[in-house]
Image (cartoon, rainbow, N blue to C red; front, side, top):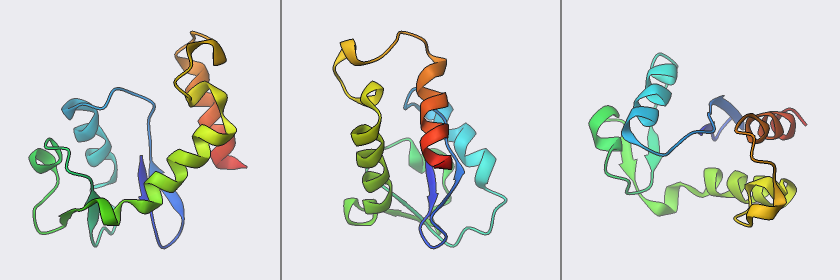
Length: 103
């Protein structure tokens, strides 16, 4: 998920695997926005597609995304790790997150 910390908006997000291909797609979707900095955790593939001059890797700077992930897990049982809390449909988590974001 990409989060604009100043405007509290989501320029791009996707329910998908956390891999280099997905990360590159997310970056391609937002790279033309006015980005002044990218804050991320220490996941190594970020270095392959985020320009070094924009990129800061620090857990101290990822609190906005961590906060939203916590809220999503709180309000959406299907995002918790217990398999009995959600349907097996791959589309339902996406729609549930979209509804929560719009709310």
